[in-house]
Image (cartoon, rainbow, N blue to C red; front, side, top):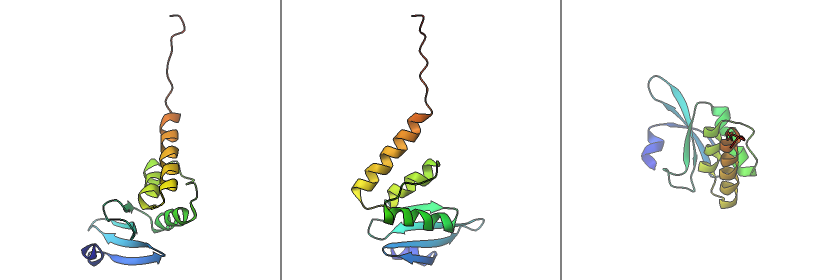
Length: 109
């Protein structure tokens, strides 16, 4: 994990979370990471520093995300190490995915 820090700049730290600023040459972005989890399962890429801080705050307080963006909602689950909160987020995702689906039934048959 050390090499991940070397290639980016740590710009924020709260409890066991860090936010890294990354520059991919053409775009600046941020990575929020839960240091209690393996890198592969415990980080998420974000365009906004403020969004990264908001997600970390929501995860720490077990708050329901206000966004409708499924990627940002999934980011909450990726950062959390609380199984109950992860289940809550996964149920929220399933609920939002199925909300837009309408089943057509021909009542003439």
